Length: 514
Image 1 (cartoon, rainbow, N blue to C red):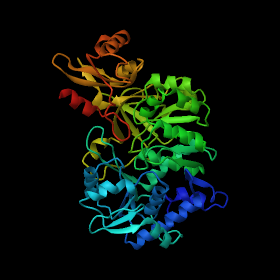
Image 2 (cartoon, rainbow, N blue to C red):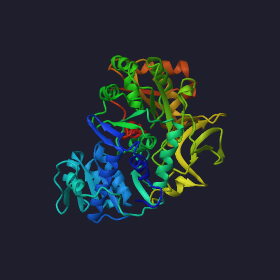
Image 3 (cartoon, one colour):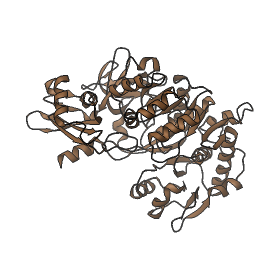
Image 4 (cartoon, one colour):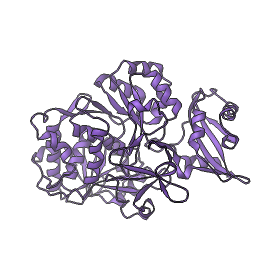
């Protein structure tokens, strides 16, 4: 048992109380883990890890799809002072090799999603804990997960863990450069977890659907752990092609009331009348979204199509808080472009062009919060991101007089044309209003006269849904001359994105240059 308030408290709180111990904490189809079962299994695995020589401060990598064993592994690792290292299930063998060589974990807990990576590992950790049948790399000791659970003790491990110790390390998705190691202590994870209970009004009556991978920060730290703290239940969507049909089927079957869907899925949802009809008669009452701004036209259309369901944006980051700002359902219909106001543990401002900090106006979004990481594990980029008492997000935004935030893009994506700042999102919002547009991105390209000029890359829903001329004429009618894109490229293949759904504009710029 930890001597301090640590991540283990999230499960211990309800597993120890007779009134809640046997309530379901998680379900996944026919599988269920009550709070008591989750705690006992985590303790058994923790005992086994100690017997394998895993000690406080050691890193344990987790490479699994969404499943209940992922949650057991998280609480087992952190309860003995170990550091959980989630590995993105979509990474290639080369990327996983690079991550393992940097992080040097003592063990890897893996399922069938790791099969290809294991065959190509050049620096595997000493121990493999196999949830499914796996072939261990040469020289690696393999331990079946089920055997470790069967041999482990269900009591709390005899370890003292400090709330200041690292609990998790996430590697960012790298929209503007190479990934960074984001280190989170127990205390910061708890800050991120507990504020969501009151800010989002979570209750035991809610059922939350976990759609993002647990290997991403949005999987665990957007509502999932907070829902546990509130004593509610979460349904886990197994990792796989996250088609809308799978999501809607699960919402209907499990009686889900809340979920998180990336903007990409919400844009696709608008094109499916049958799925919208099924959701209209379901229990779903609130969908939160993030990763990138959702076009106003999409938000408004979804609210018309789903009058009983609120589509609300939030703004956050892997560095945490994952929900730095949020908007209530009542406000969302009046302010569809807004990501809302600061959460209860966040102070938010903007850094203006003259490097001063302001609480109204345009600039780079900066914030302060007890949930924010201290840095990137010794990475030189820490100094630039954490300076002057603020975390500099690299995102551009606008704060109005009421403190509402509108995210306008990445600061590196801003286009400067003739000395005037031009935010791509404004143009993208206009283009998104055109029927036949699935998604759109605007990038700046070099121009001899103006420095930069905007170019629009537009994905059409069908091959002949619209032409470049349609887009140019629409922009001419809605935008000032200097904001209108000089060129429009129409394509049917999706825009390149990170695994969390953020558009990779650096790839679009490189492609345009070629």
